[in-house]
Image 1 (tube, rainbow, N blue to C red):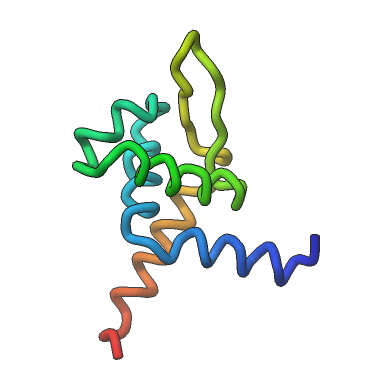
Image 2 (image 1 turned 60 degrees about the vertical axis):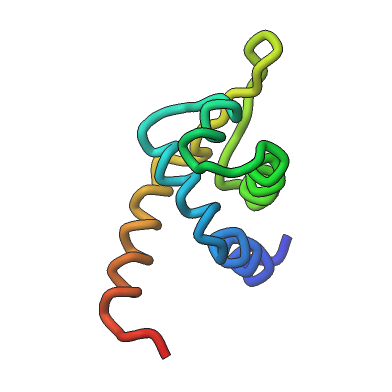
Length: 95
């Protein structure tokens, strides 16, 4: 895959506040999708769609544990990426 396309996919995946919140939750450790429902106060189907976007972008991975799917960050660099974006967003007022 072209590197520019890959970066664009990552940016698109990070363009949702819900997906950024999911990444922040997963920074604390792996979670079952069912654990995200009360934390995010969203319908399970909505969370599932957001998890799919993050997974396709390569930001999270999953593994099966019995009937549950356990989600985790795909790279230890993701928290650093989030901190960089937060720093950039605080440097300028939104237009």
